[in-house]
Length: 130
Image (cartoon, rainbow, N blue to C red; front, side, top):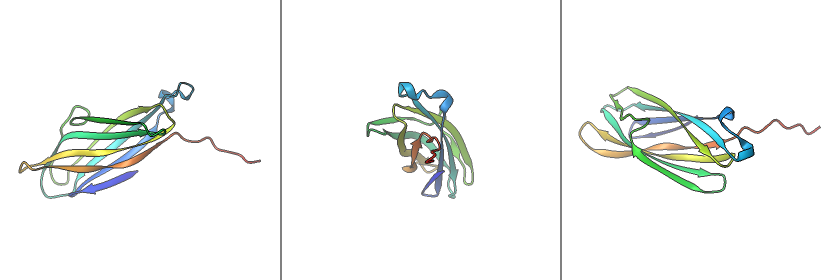
């Protein structure tokens, strides 16, 4: 679990490798990630857009920008939580992701909040030395 807090908005991400959707023999590795956004402040905020920076194990970078998340632009009143899940494929068995959400306060101010950078790692098989 990875957490970042910006301006009283807490973002927590939990990644999970999906072996049933991956095919290591074809360099196809897939992860789900579960996101929780909690408004711990005293002002309503709305998520307007997202920015992701995805880096695979060879250092290749993909950037993703777009409106909202999973087709939604949730409005979070103070104390409210919004949760969603999504996924990403990589051609390497490890990588990292991070980024930002652009939020808008009820007063019309736009600002970015951090999405914590998190690790995408295929689980290693257990090793026996003897």
